[in-house]
Length: 500
Image (cartoon, rainbow, N blue to C red):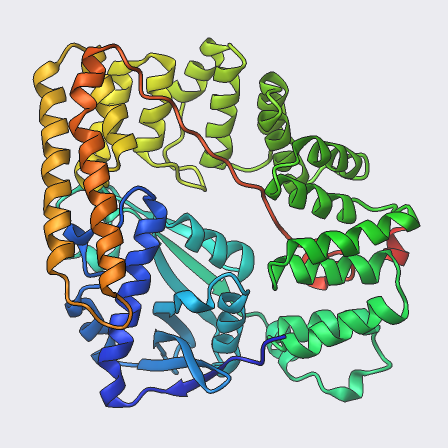
């Protein structure tokens, strides 16, 4: 297990290094959102030097480095208002070497613990940063409270002139720190004996005391193996340690007890989806559904149906999901499309809700319209975001194919030539980029090679379109998570004995 994360002051001569790490992390986030682009330098650096300096010198600015085992693993820039208790996160990052270890979640709760008088935390993130949205909502307990767009611009664009509609598009998040949050932090050993050990382990987890929480969960599973103790330790391993194999082993042990709850089956189904074992996922999720129909079970079961080619059933199950999620709605559209019910898919898109909770970008909508053969509608959607989107060979091919089908060959050629020129400029920028310990000659050479390959792919696009090649449709979906902890008071989950 890793040791606890702490916050430490940043010396003046460390601010430049912190800025470089922050910008590298943010640019990596953009690359991950737009997979085919190595480094969107035309938008970099992010954040800009001006934005970084503004945050450093703003009233109430607090800069801290995130420390673990005596080493910096990230940093955060906050705006602390001691009068109102309403505090804002300007920038938060962790080094790439710390990714995939549950450290981001631990880092956030370390920040909460460092500022216990906070009444409300607030932050903003771009609409396309799906990983950040997942992190803040599903891991850290934030809620999306507002969507900024051209018709509802945020305060940060006042007096500015964004070059595209998409530069307005941000989500605003809030996390209200209730009295219960503060009370949990004041718990001490005197509570032992007054509450169950399982409840205490969960409270320790909510206080960001991961090591103690893990030790207690592990002790319970070892000394008194049961559906509850094994399930809760498995949940910890899956959510906090991202160790699916260990989580699955623990959950399979619960099956010996013939669980009378959906939780073990939900987790086993989710793990099976990650492992692309879709029949196994369907089996477990149907068992979970026999106990209760939750958002997570319904969504994941629909995904299993989809991956098994059971598209009509997938569409019906996606339609049962509660809430107003653009992502789930688009999954339903694509399911109807694959099931051959094109009219149903078109009808759903025709009544699309642009204000849905989980915003779906215009490029994604355009891509589905292409597959439906609705090229005029696809063009309208492509044009909304094209100048702010990245020129991946996939997106270029789908847009160019749309224009080709509309017989607007001049526009098609212009899109292809624009993409080729952008790839050339990206390659030149990468070749001239200064090397350092985080960006070696090998990193540069690999990036340049990939950019050359992307440029060559785009250069052959016109010829391929002339020969009737149809760029294939690529569509991904990812499993839903959530809390499946027995005894979690925050989510109203009783202990297993109370369930049975």
